[in-house]
Image (cartoon, rainbow, N blue to C red; front, side, top):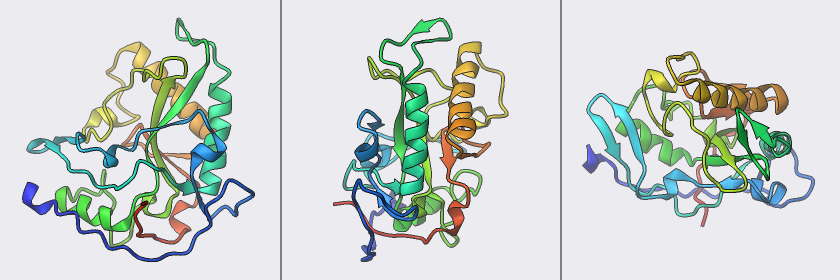
Length: 224
């Protein structure tokens, strides 16, 4: 299967506005420009990430992205800011102290459609990998994969699974977990959905998306 993973990107020129000003909702922006203390850790820009719990076991992945710079729709960045502003005010939670509050760490945002084809070639399971023929919400900049961190230390709060764990444990419906993990997952879900207004995807506790994300255009360009 590793031989299938040939990263041959199709670079398409697509005009977009990239600034920290008053963007239209459908323009792509870097959330760091709006939320300086948000943490960006794009896993597909790393060479030590895995798809976990595939039928044949874990699969080590190559580096798919050329940059750790994250882009999302402007409307998504605004929602993320609302979530971060709320989380930052939390100083005590679940019996622990957070001197600088809690924050978000983004693992993925906009994803080139060419990468989606590579993912589908590796694991064509529509529960976890959107069919590239129709495209993913990530291919439109309308979805984010993220978790919670202690803003003072940068340490991630405990969650049900690691990112890209394709098992039932990643679902919001799976509850056979330690109480602190259930509480952390519930906090993320509450802030992202009820406070920020994003939609939940039940199969992946880390995935949130802009309402109507599927209506935005599919994109296929790499960050330099």
